[in-house]
Amino acid sequence: MIDLEILVEDDSKLRLDYFVAENIEEISRSMAANLISDGLISVDGVIQKSSYRLKSGEVVFVSSVHNPQIELTPQDIPLDIIFEDEDLIVINKQSGLPVHPGPGHPDQTLANAVLYACPDLQGIRTIRPGIVHRLDKDTSGVIVIAKNDHALSHLSTQLKNREMDKTYLCLVKGNLSSFKAVIDAPIARDPYHRQRMAIVENGRQSFTKFSVLKRFNQFDYVELKPLTGRTHQIRVHMNSLGNPVAGDSLYNGFVPGLNRQFLHAQKISFVHPSTLNIVEFSTDLPGDLTCFLNNIDKE
Image 1 (cartoon, rainbow, N blue to C red):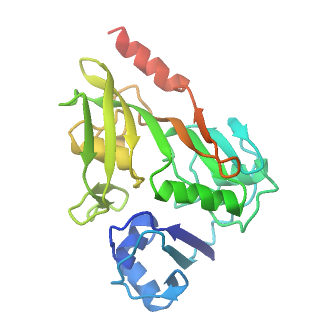
Image 2: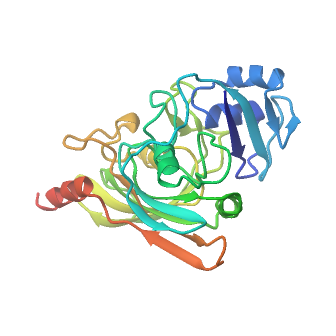
């Protein structure tokens, strides 16, 4: 039995059953509705109906995500630790490392590695111990892990209030129609493809700001700032413009010579939970993406 707590980050008024299905890949909307009917999903400790409209700041507790193959244990996985103190640990996540267990990867995740690197990590060992925000498996870059309840609460509040500033570097196929813009398009689970997200009329409000750093004949090198934090947000938004992330085979971005999506979480800044000072951490573009970018420049 694996318990999950999911923070509602905005006032999109999404139905409870849709919210659970959107946030837990292995649960469909109908499955979520059944779990809600069985009293196994609550909102702030209160059992609600499937049609209940969620509000920002509420916490959805799912007490029946059962998968006997998943047991979170510390594992000695190499980590590139950028910074660590009593409250948090900042990691430069390598591509190919899932953040937490899920279908197809019950272990060998960042969560397993963090438990090994931080044996004094406080709190219950859920499948997302101290993880404030997520990066896709094949997205590299900076990610922040809280080491105690105070830090987790403080950082989660900043994330919910859109006070955590995140910057990504990305290569997209083709040339964008604008050099700078803000994409405003709602995102939800793709009703026809469970592994994908999509632009859906009644989806969750989603904003991504972008600016082109360098233009090539067949690509644009782009800096992006997601103003909201939806699953696959950058990948879905860029694909919706007809300029999918290069190398992203899930969203029409296949490119010969790229074995993963060209997406890197370069920088993050936030208020430190104890010092209350603004802190910033950044990571260089990894070698595989740098090599591909340099080879484009020579064409």
